[in-house]
Image (cartoon, rainbow, N blue to C red; front, side):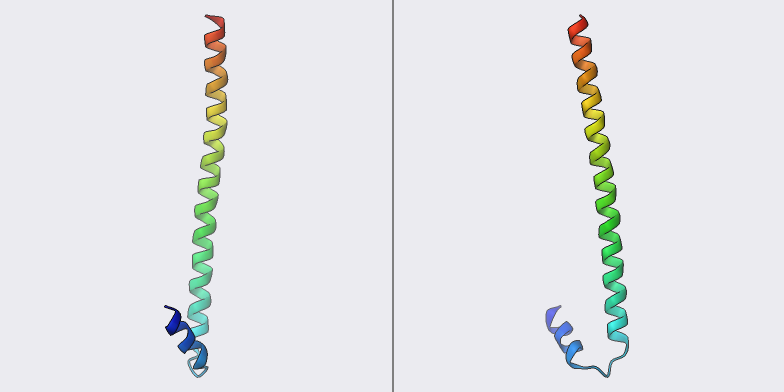
Length: 64
């Protein structure tokens, strides 16, 4: 992957290479952003759910 990138850099007569690289980079950044947002939201919801469940279990055990 790295040698082809270096070869593409040394060959400026290929006009499609920078556009293709920018498109791939934009796609990868968008995918990573979506993945991190999904995992962040899921972790946040799991944290909220866990805290609520622990509070409910503590209140249930304290009342009995």
